[in-house]
Image 1 (cartoon, rainbow, N blue to C red):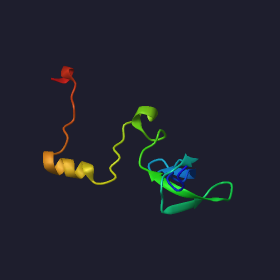
Image 2 (cartoon, rainbow, N blue to C red):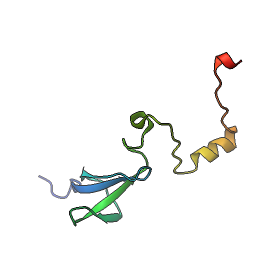
Image 3 (spheres, helix red, strand yellow):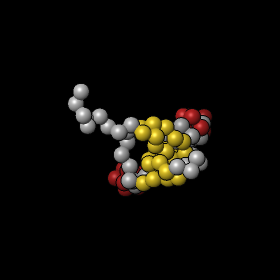
Length: 90
């Protein structure tokens, strides 16, 4: 077997930046930050903008998560979104 060709598989803490929820799982993701977990040990920290705790499909609520100014760029380019109206209002 060739040595040093596989990524390092280790416990990593993932944190949802929208809801603040955190969980620990195993991953090969490379991170710069670390966090002290509930067990007192330090683990790499990976921040994610959306997870199952904040995604509209799982929560049933519609929220716009704009992490890189995409909404503003879209509205600047194409104009503001228009509100949809029911066909019965016309």
